[in-house]
Image 1 (spheres, rainbow, N blue to C red):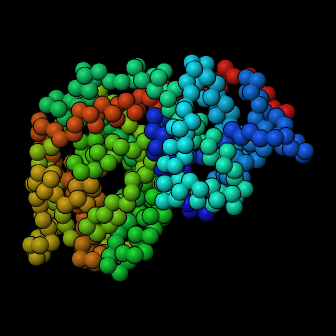
Image 2: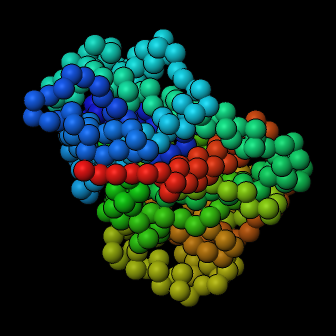
Image 3: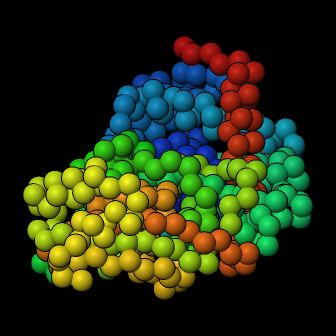
Length: 418
């Protein structure tokens, strides 16, 4: 049951994109019902005069416990229900409502994310003492907030043609867009394929930055594992072209599905997106070197790689390291990005000139690759569409407006607890 709920909440967060908040744990359960003798339906919190009952708080905390939410589930439930009331009040003030048929459609879509009918979902939830009204109100408040944010901030957030041009950079390059990602790169061999694929599926369903970071520290082979998989801001144009629309489609906190690489599985979590104001060109060619070290990811091979990295400043220095060895030990190539193997292109995207990576292997994991970026040659053409760039800018701005507005609503609210 917990796996089903986790799966559903991840996808509902993606569905409610215009809300642009990390609502995975902020379930909206504004319940109604007859009075209960034990006082569960008495108000325990009022938000600008609107009551939150003990029953609502209990339901929310129960659901968070079912999901293994980190922290004090009662306090998490309290904060989420307060925000729900503020969202509903803001929408009501400007006469925004969601038709009942849209709510029913939303419930059907919610259930379909786990390949269930709505009745199958409700039956499963009932086994956890979570009512139909909880699901209905959860869907409804998210739909209302999405409509409210779009109506209030849509015009201000929508980028102009000039802003899209600036973000895309000269010649149509999308260098004005930067992304802040975390990554998990898990090596895979034919012997470990089933285990790695199962692990990657589990990581794809984690619901927090901390959980993803912990997975990166434990399982990732990338250099970023020492920082919990966190990468710095990077221009979108550095990423391999097929990966760019995948990354642009992510909202904050979302994680890609596992991505197959030649000798690894990769996952990325979006931590931020911004307009840099600086044009980053696309690249016509990437110059890089690959030095092969026997032993795979053994301590000895990794130690050898580190000694080479410490003793070299540029790609040219690798020729001296490889002197007297078979020619296949060192390969230097200068290729268009589309011709570079996907895993190599991904590692190169994180590097500046003369920086190195030891995340890759070859020969079914038996050979470690010391990869060094030698340089990049810019081009003036681009493949990212104006719509992709425009939508990314819109989502980023709506998210910022919505989060700031919700904090202001909270600051202005009269909240009483009993």
